[in-house]
Length: 498
Image (tube, rainbow, N blue to C red):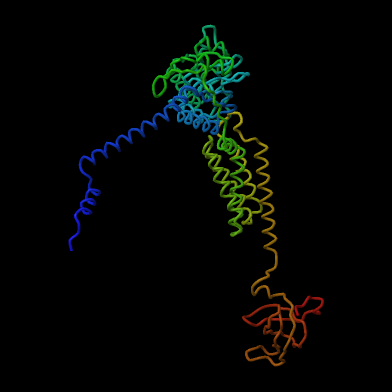
């Protein structure tokens, strides 16, 4: 059967369009893609330009430089880079902080594609110790009148008890007091730390073109400067009364960053102030040494109660969470691993005291080890990072009381009579329900055998004296399925089971 050729030709043309038609289709697709790309770029370009021309990100930092503040500054600089802000201003008011957190902040500043200005905020703020390093690392350093910076000597990070050098005022030449030679009282480790810190801040000063000699004296001699003195000695770039004045003075300045030079246009910039979020607040709480130690202690005791009472669930869950959060906090802090090992050893001794009859030896040793470990745990003398003695005493006393009660409960449990198993029958009182005066085969001559009800159960009993039905008997022993009994007092006086 023949078919008409037109439908076949039409279908062929639809499936395989002619060469000229296919060329026009490609031109249309390419034009559409180009128009779409241009529209997307045109829509994104104004917002990017607006962000790059009109936004200044302000990052307020008050208090000690800690893991929480380091995380906050690092994430804020990343956000400023993602939003193409033209400037990030770190408003500083800090007495110093941890070396590891300071170096994390400086690494973020050095790698930032957005210019960073460190501004020692008005109102009597300061940038001491770690704050001085951050100021030197920033692309722009500014101070408000009435503020100061310096005293950058690293507070001892290893051997407790060594005081930092006394602060000295710079001499008339502006270079500070001469560096005193190292004394025998300074340990080799301390001299190495001071030398490393001096080289670090000198490198930052040379990178930013600031006074490197004074920076080194700030580390070795703990000298400090006011705002006017810092400007005169080229430690900072400018002085501004407040943030609007700072932005006006920075307008038109060219700043060299990791991605190249940037010209600032900040006189009419839109200011966006970032505030710490829940993550920063959480880190600030858990990285408190007191909180970290308490979480560690709760975690150990929670796991102990879970292992002692399997299936209770709640102590195990809470203990595991507290232990992991405490360990997370400790890995962010400068800790002594010897102190941490002593804390775990002390807690292990306190837990073992509840199971072993050591008459308080393990418990006392555990308290001593726990207290010594808590004193040694935080390996820095920075203000706010030590564990106070009242906290250590309270945790030690709480552990001692807990172990005392656990030991007393265990001791009383050992002294209680057995209430289950065959041993629980000894001493029980029963009633004869059937007696035989003639002993059964294999029984000793003169012995009486019969049946009695003990604990509601029917038992075969044996006694040296004759047994009478209804008489009360007391179980004295057990041999297999036969109980040895003797005559007992009246059932109503002994609480005989019916």
